[in-house]
Length: 294
Image 1 (tube, rainbow, N blue to C red):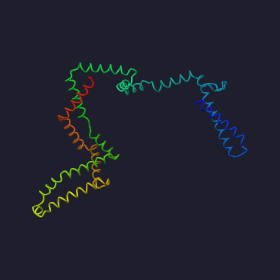
Image 2: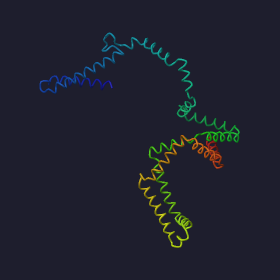
Image 3: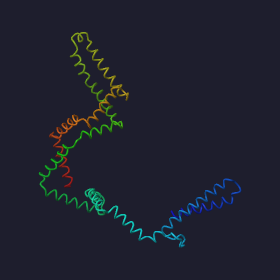
Image 4: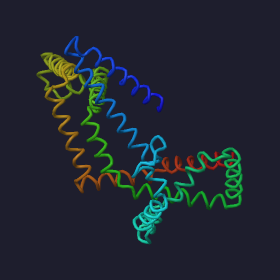
């Protein structure tokens, strides 16, 4: 960096000398000379200002230079006083200690210590030894009960509402709507015979006798297929807009409607009370224990 700055200063000096010698040949040389002169003056001023902080420029005892060496003791005292009065007061230190997360600091240290492999191996052996010394059945029951309690206390309704709201803002809900439309169309085709039978049963005897029930079924199926095809092709379809309005209301209710939140909490509790979910939690604990035990 020093060589680059010196080289640029020499280039500006050479350019200044050349522009001054050629000044009579063209008016542009005057502008070039002014540019080079300003660059030299600025470079010399910066060099003098920076040098004067640490030593005498060119070794000359110019007044008000070598500022830091001559005042280092006073600067040190001032800096120490500033740190003591602004960062090391009991109130500030106590606040810092309260915000100190020792667990997170230990985790960061364990992630990359100087003797990473040795420390991890020792920690693993200690964890295995502690785990084996405990009552496995009692410990497992405590872990599973704690996990289930935490899940039951989790208010998932606002989280679901916020996630749905964010997905709609980014347009990430549209592929889901497309999938629902495709699934509905396939379900309609797969159950065509059932739908025709239901229409025939609900049609009057006269319609069945005249064969109009078949035409009615064809009209219903064709109308549904046409509507689903239009919804799949047109992202601004009216029914799509209605569906998005419903999703937006659902996102709002999940976050702000106590009745909706109560229903979601009830569903959450029913899921957690399901024996299959409890078996899944059991499997999580057994997998974690097996992983720790190696």
